[in-house]
Image 1 (tube, one colour):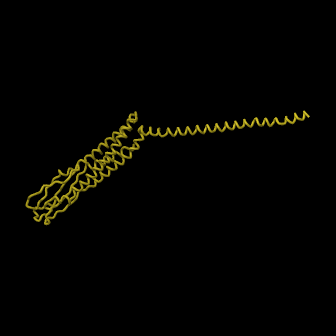
Image 2: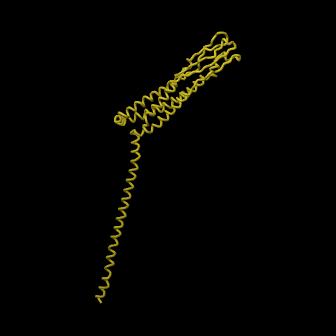
Image 3: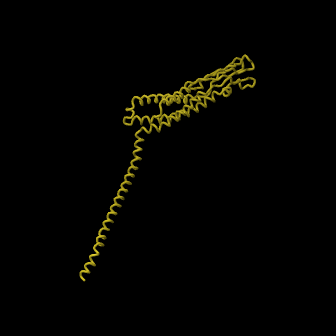
Length: 265
């Protein structure tokens, strides 16, 4: 497995930048009657981004009557799911570190530890992908709902041309953007670690044995074929020498013929 402190560090960045966020925006409504104006309307929101519960009051520029409004949207489900995945990923990587250091023998016993580690790694890879994608969509909704231009459209006073409505400052979303980036980085980290964890399981070793057995059989049959061919060549050479032997003997007996004919004469 890859160095586990990297998993823990990336998980901490993911849930800290999302779960620890708090921001806000400030608007101003300048009415024709200056006594009815409000030049500092603060709207604060934070994790888990239940924006429909964020309420604020604005002037109507029609006497002292005030209008109570609320932001639009609820991204709590995607934000809470993302943070939950990050927290559990951190806890699992922390527990895996303890097991790898102090219980290495128990981890490899009966191949149970690597199999569990492989399955959990696959599950967390999938959860990181789903959680990061959902939170990216949720963050997009949060940005639209807290856009000062969109909020100003909710105010009745801003629909009158005589009144001046403007945004004093917009919310800073840099840490939330960072949380999405770390979410997808965690997915890449966990998905890339699947192969390293798989090599520690019995499935990988059994697959290697399955591939090596046919190659061994093929090489052994080739060696046997070469041995038979060599033995066949040596035996054929021996038989040829044996067949040439008697012919030389017969050739050596030919002088006996003329000798016996001379003696007869």
